[in-house]
Amino acid sequence: MRGREENLTKTYFPKSGTEAFLTARDGIKIRYGIFPAEKETKATILLVNGHREFIEKYSEFIESLQARGYTVYAYDHRGQGLSGRLLKNPLKSHNPDFGALVRDMHQIVEEIIKPQLKAGPLYLIGHSLGGQICLRHLHDFPASFDKAILLAPFLDLIIGPKPIAMMVKFYFKLLSFLGFSELFAPGQPRNRNMIDHDLTFSQLTHDRERYMWAEQAIDQNPGLFIGGVTYGWLAGVIKSFKIIHSPGYTDAIKIPVLVLLAEQEFVVNNETTLRIFKNAAHVEIETIAGTRHEMYREIDPIRNRVLEKIVNFFSP
Image 1 (cartoon, rainbow, N blue to C red):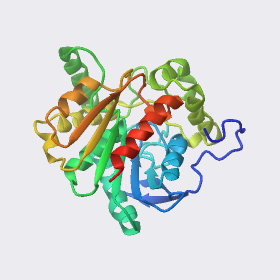
Image 2: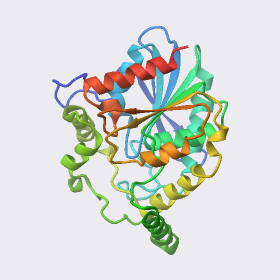
Image 3: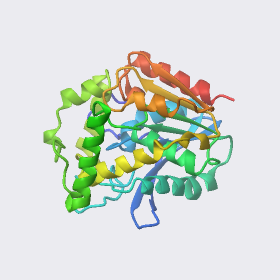
Image 4: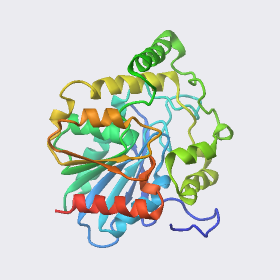
């Protein structure tokens, strides 16, 4: 991994990249980056990250794609990273309308990527929450991309048996409706000191050094950090789930899609993902043995296997 031996004076932003901001139609500033291929561009990829993530967390992954001939665009979702927040408290992860995330993504595609697209096809990679937003975009704007890969897409919460899950989701929506939308949900970290890194690491990856990369990036730029979710965020994601879970939703997908699931998954509900894509004609699903949720920053044997599958799937 680049810079493992360096100190905190190093740059965590991917090399050979530029940073800029797009103003969303409702005025929120969206931070994005452009990372040209190291050699002649054979295709362009939009990389859509997950909840509470930011461009720097994907530096090694982006550089690996650059080295393989891909130009990569990436951005920070509204409400996280260095994009604009929705509340005065910048540590609250709050987004009651996940449709806004889809609109932000589409604006980036139409106003930033397509005008600069010079050669080759346009591909899509979404991880976790990014996979959810990508799926919704593929449904709403089916002609935007040539192929897509969803890494451990966040299409449902892991709660428990269906009756309990329904009660919990109703509780979250009710509290948001009753005026508690902007309050932290129970157990959510209000600052960095509340995060149990041993537990979080054990759920996300087997590679401690890659896990610490993101924490060191936050040390260098504390503005990258966002805390736990609000009731409004939970109500928003439950509403988004309802849209995605509607019968026939994936019928709108007309391009080849590869879904890679983590065998050791503690964050998203793989059973729901398998059910949603069960009859999707253009979707291929594969479970990656031995990996945890963040397969893009796993130990080398797993990470290299994932990169190989990405390159093979995107090959003409």
